[in-house]
Amino acid sequence: MAENKEIPPQYDLNAKWDACLDLGVRRFVYSTATGAFAGLLLFHLGNGGGLVEYNEVYRLCLGTAIRFRSMLMMI
Image 1 (cartoon, rainbow, N blue to C red):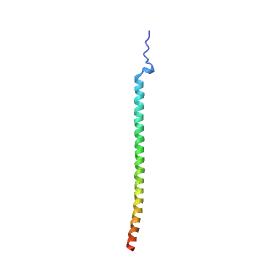
Image 2: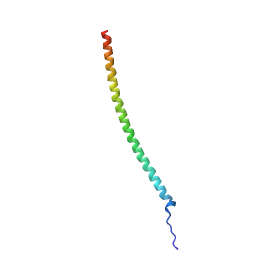
Image 3: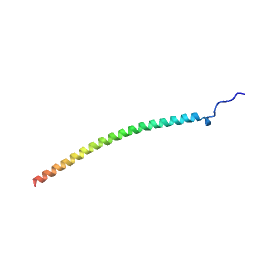
Image 4: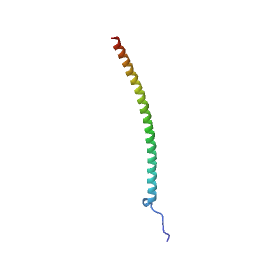
């Protein structure tokens, strides 16, 4: 009688571990890449938007201060 050495798929732990590790590594790499891209994008937008807004507000406030000083000198 020949013995059947094939393991049924539901009991094959090697295949389950391979699939689990493959899925875990793939999710880790994809999420790391996505997080790095999102972080760079948000940093770029936040930094650029912040600098633009700061310059605009500074210019507006400086213009207001100059106008206010010139009005005080007229008095």
